[in-house]
Image 1 (tube, rainbow, N blue to C red):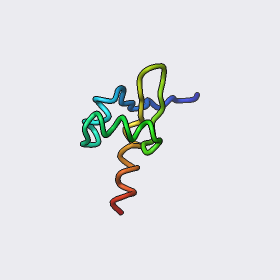
Image 2: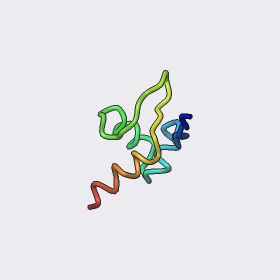
Image 3: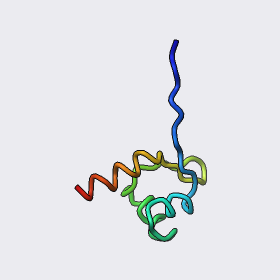
Image 4: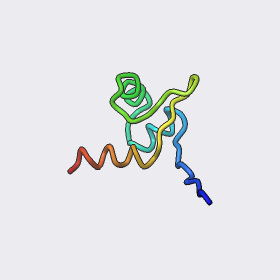
Length: 61
């Protein structure tokens, strides 16, 4: 039996900005330039919480 792991997704620029401690404008720029591990789905951006945290922890190390 295969178990599925639930993804902890963060939807929208506002939520992503809140998570990473940036303004929505800064976050939008980072998303558009590919500087954040996220994808655009339709008109909304989505990111996996664990990947965002790992991305910033990698910079701090």
